[in-house]
Every structure is written in structure tokens, then in C-alpha cells.
Length: 404
Image (cartoon, rainbow, N blue to C red):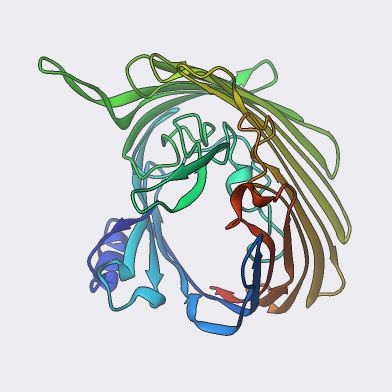
């Protein structure tokens, strides 16, 4: 979530204001640049292209965060400073802005932020790993493919489902991974069935219903999240727009030290828009000593109103990492993205891909490192049906990052 703001000339003023309210203040500053040593691309038909040592179009953006809290209230401000965009109005943006107030076990949270209970297991061993992406968000995929579409100039591209309100469903403070305001109230019951139960209800910024006689600008969310010693269950209901209803249940288990697993189901429908959409998510992580292995899977199905058949997709990702020493870590990431599993269009458009990425991270200390990798992506279903599709793509990213 990125909201454009004017340059923060008063960061020190903010710090002074927060500390004057007898709050504990924490400031975090980070710097990152994503460069590319090599980019190679080969379409189904046409010339291949190669780019070396790309600094001009590299991404140079990271966070400057302020946190202030006391025993009954808190404020979080997370901003992104984009050095690559420094000459434009979006050089500094708000990523998160919210506050909270406690009345004992009752808590109110309000602002623009994310609120997730179930672990997504998207923290990768190196920078920009293949699991730290849309696949990690519980709910219906935004990548389901419908075939080709043609714009007004005659240029063809693959039609995608995009981010529906069932995307990132586990985020109870947002709709469709958006940049909306939320007002949530949660109440904690500390002793329920051997665990802690948190009940949440709230309003999410949305054009819920707009007619000549009625204008409602917020949808609804409800959540019941229970956490025990080795098991947790998260149940969510959302009504983000009029006649749109969805629900989800995510079960997390920890059968032994170093082993974690999640199984989740998300489903919903919307009158005159979606007959039925659902997703099944799975996570498994094993960690022991210097080795960590994470596996992520997602099956998605969406049947738009009036469609003969549902569009389906299967996404699978994994990362296995090994800590060689205090300064060197190596990893192997892989992704299989069948965004057109059903092939309802009966065409081979190159939208189904496999990616392999060996990676290495070289740390100067706990919060400063250089990551380099090779990302090889191959389309699994290319043909003359879509000659502009990328058949082979190779990247060698190099990422420098400091977190202080």
C-alpha cells in the first residue's frame, strides 16, 4: 500500500511530538538498491534481447519507520523513500499509518495498515526470494489466465483475473490488497479451550453501495482467531460490497519443534459478478540447525457470472536454504505457476512457467548484506498461438541492503 505524501521535512518534529506524549519511540531506517548484472529474454518468435549492468532502471527504495507506544496506545508510521523517483511527487510515500487504543482487553485500531493473524511463511532466506510474492497471500490468486485480449491499437496480451476482493483474504484490514482505511475493534478472551481467543469486527473502506437514495462507503469484516500451544485456527467473514460474501478458515499446526504447517480454504460469491470462487492454500516449513525448507502451494478457481466453466490455476513454490557460516548463506528457490491450469481457451500462450533460482547472501553483519542470484524462467506452453510470449527469461539480480 503506497499513498503519496509531501516530503517529510519534519521527521524530527514528529519524533519530538511523540516523545513529549511520554511514549517509547523507535525509529528504523533501511536502504536498498536492486541492480541487475544481466537480463536476457527470448520470445517465441523474434529477436532475443540482453541488458548488462543495469543501474539506470534499478530500484532504490526502502523504509523509514517510526513507532511510538505506551501501555494504552500506540502510533505506527511507515514511509517509503524512493531514490529512483526523487525528481517526482512520489519520492516519499506512506506505506502504513495507523493508531491503536487499549481499554483493557478491548482494542481499537484505525488507519491504513495490514492485519494478518495466520503466518504466510513468506520471509525468504535471501532478499527478494521467490516465495515473497503474491503466492504467499491466502485467498484466490490474482494470476488466473483467461486467454488473449487485444487493446485499441491491436496489441495482444494475456488477460488475467487481477486482484478480486477474495485476494489476500487473510488480511482483515484490507480488501483486494488495497490501500484502504480500516476501523477494527477486537476483544481478547485469554482463557478459551486452553488458548487465547481474539474476536474482531470492523469496517473497511469500500464503495459498498451507491444509489440515488443510499450511499454506503464501508464494508464489513468479522474474525475469530484462536491460538493454542501448538495449534491455531483463524476464521474470517467479509462482506466488502453489497451482495458480496466470502469466508475463510486457516488451520495452523506445530507437530514438533522446527515443523510448522498451514492448511486454508477461502471461498465466496458476488451477485451478478462471481458465481463461485475459492482457493486452497498449503504451507509447510522445516527448520533445523543450519537448514530451512519451506513449501507453498495454492489452487485457485473462479467462475465469473455467465461463464461456462471455471478458470483454475495451480501455484507451487519452495525454498531450501543452508547457512554456511555467519557471513554466507546459500539457497535454492523454485516456482511452478500454472495460471491456466484448465486451458479453457484451448491455446498455448506461454502463461504457464517454471522458475529455478540458485541464490547466495553475503552478510557483513546481522543487518547488512549483499544478495546475488540467477533466475531462470521457462514457459511450458509456448506456440505460434501467441508469438510475443516470452519463452525463456534469465536474470541475475544483485541486491544491496542495510537495515538499521
